[in-house]
Length: 401
Image (cartoon, rainbow, N blue to C red; front, side, top):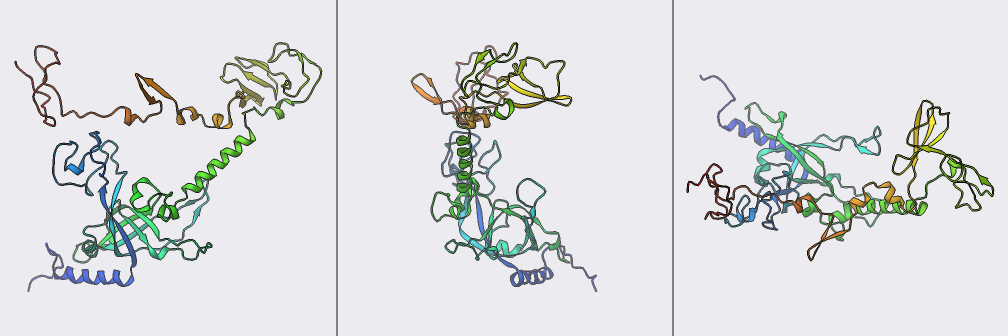
């Protein structure tokens, strides 16, 4: 009688029996999961002239003239420079699988600034063979799943439409608990994180400006943008011309008497209006005074704009900068305002070019597989070889003519 052993070099009847039992467990006790299958980067724009963005429509890895099987797949990369797939294609058909995971409480983490969901990451398991049979492959990073059992159908707004919870597959591997006595795996484990309103999932979400799209129903982008604009408008209204707040520091008041400032900021004059009087005179200079007293104000004129300090204990504490009155609250608050919101243009020849341009638009990478032959006797570059475009040139090649 041969020795008993469940291990076989191939998937035997023992494996098939256990696999059917495990599949039945997922079918009976698992939750329904709708899968949006990732098909690869969106190459509908064709070749853009950038070697770092291959033209998969032509069946090539970068060139434009070659022909071959059209379309990208899951193994292709849209941007070889940044290794990103920003524009993604998804199967218009939706596949239903059964998955199992441990439901946890969604607690807010109050130890950080703002509100953060500390455990809104789901680890879900699927039956491998059932998944491959229905999906055609295993789940992989980039796939999007929606969980109908997490739909909130008790909304306060009766007119609002309840929506399933969407997650994105971040990682996938064989689950440690999915190996049977035959040492063959039966379970596929994926890590899911909530899907955001990002460019990668535009084929699924659509745009928030499109009425009836998922982005219009799920995304909070428009609300957050409106709140941000309202905050800026309120700040501009409260401080329209950027006047420094010096009332509480210098005691601005209407005075009709001579103020002698000798050796400090300001001049001797008779002030008869609120706009003219700048309050108490404050010492200034390029270095702090050696004998300073507690609470003394001092303006450092070597700062641009001039900066006001006050003596507290053993150190000088910065209060604020003397911002010109022509600058608005936005200009003073956002240091990069003139750079980020630059709308100026430069004239080169007869053409207008915007000063604000992406570096990737101005400096394009060049392919190094094209070139001219070099001569061993001179550095003349006027000699051009008869190689066709796309033909590889050996960098060690030397023309002996």
